[in-house]
Image (cartoon, rainbow, N blue to C red; front, side, top):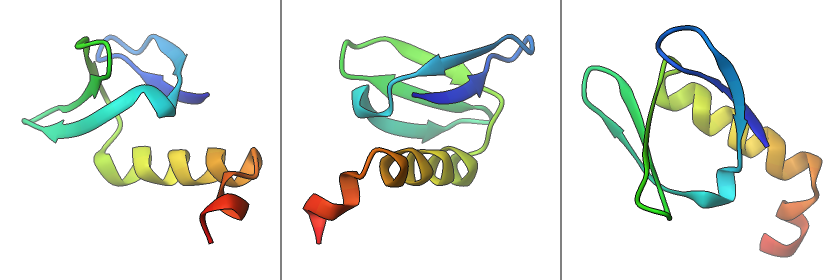
Length: 65
C-alpha cells in the first residue's frame, strides 16, 4: 500500500496494483480498476516513486527481470 493525500489533507493508503492509469488535470487523478477516480495532492512523479519503492519492498521486481 502507498500513502496518498486527498486535497483536504486527509492521508490514506491505496493499493497501487489497483491503479489503471494516472491523469494530470491540474490535480493528479488516479483511475482505479473499479472505475473510481481518486484526486490526490501528490504529483505523478511522487506517486510513481512510491509505487516503485512499494514494489521493491514486496520483492515484485525479482519476478520482472
